[in-house]
Image (tube, rainbow, N blue to C red):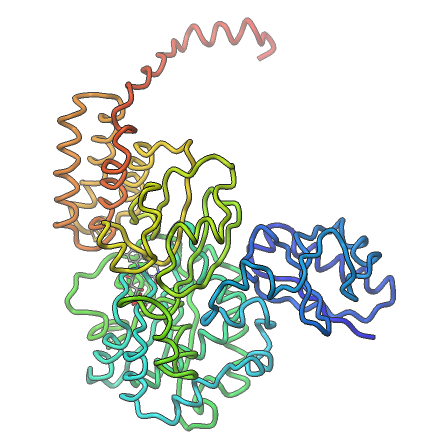
Length: 535
Ligand SMILES: Cc1cc2nc3c(=O)[nH]c(=O)nc-3n(C[C@H](O)[C@H](O)[C@H](O)COP(=O)(O)O)c2cc1C
Ligand code: SF4
């Protein structure tokens, strides 16, 4: 009798001991002379259950978690390979409510397949989108993407079909597809999960994008903090070349597409598309003024599609199942699914793929189970460090680009960071300005100087120094940064700052903290010598 056991190799699972668990399962199998193959899959995205071990049974995969190295022998003793009862058994994986209630389109295979098995990928519906695309004219591929309503998942929600159409009609001897996998937003990890759990879906999506706009080369820009993802991606690219899905004759079509992965050097601004292009070309990541748009003059001055990883990874299912299938999910102008990433002070952190339109409250409570601390929720920041802080009263906002914009917020990359009632929003506002000051590329004055002055103004508000006047000044400064910044880092940082002031005014009117005690260095040294004479 042979068995298949799945132990994720996703970074989130590795960080809580998945490697040790996989070794313990292999060791226990060999000492008990059992024929067990351990498949290293991606994560299912239920982080509080990691390492989540799954066993293939006739009824489907059974989940056990969180499994520790120490619990492995007990699992074998209990007969987990036959799906027998054990305290860690969670039942059939697909029946776990957190997963069952999702609508996984982009993440359909993540956590199910072996990320480096092209056969697995194909067996689970992979490369069907490419086959369809190969039979279409470039314009028809672009039309399909446009009809699907797909909008960029990197932050701005720009219609992908329109961007592709611009590149398709740009005349050039060379065009490029660039995948933005810099994933700098706080609380986000969807890009990483795809790279580590289902890399071929990205490769397929980029290949289709290449066919659509006439680009024969693609680059994936991976943030430096993702070494595991980078390794998996490189191996997957190698396999796709070996099997004829990349290179001079993709899938026997006679059409060419080459793909390269590049590692960034670790700067939030390198996620902004023009900085990313600078970085890809080997320069310091700094903003390029727009126009020209990257679609006209992008990488190496050539027409370039820059899309977020999730945008590109959503393309294969659109081509495979058709634009109508995809656009049937969602609400208003937000079509398809959003990959919600629950983070911060949340009980059940993880990835939830759901049609646009689910409320923030349902995402946090129905899926996330509320705060991890058990304290009442006080604030939520959606959309990364440039996103607004929403209070409890805005939790019924549907996750939809327009609904968020109407409340002076933004969805960004779908990161949801939860805070309980111990959070101080004045400190968070200060943190936002300080983040901008640290990450500013320095190219324009409103952001470079404004963010540093912003920290000083917030400090004066916190210490109750001429508070009313400084609150006015902060408003003026935010207006200037919004209107005068060259890119959205300086232009959007007022969102978290002003939302904190608007929704949590009580945190900006607290009594000033006592001044820091002035330390008398000589006296401190003397007392130190008296208490620690050996020093
Ligand atoms: C400061 C800043 C950081 C950004 N970081 C990212 C990022 O990490 N990943 C990403 O895909 N887009 C990021 N963006 C958005 C990109 O500039 C660009 O709009 C996006 O990659 C386009 O792809 P999409 O149309 O698929 O969303 C950032 C933008 C700004 C202003
Ligand atoms: S807003 Fe900030 S990050 Fe953007 S160009 Fe200006 S200085 Fe650079």
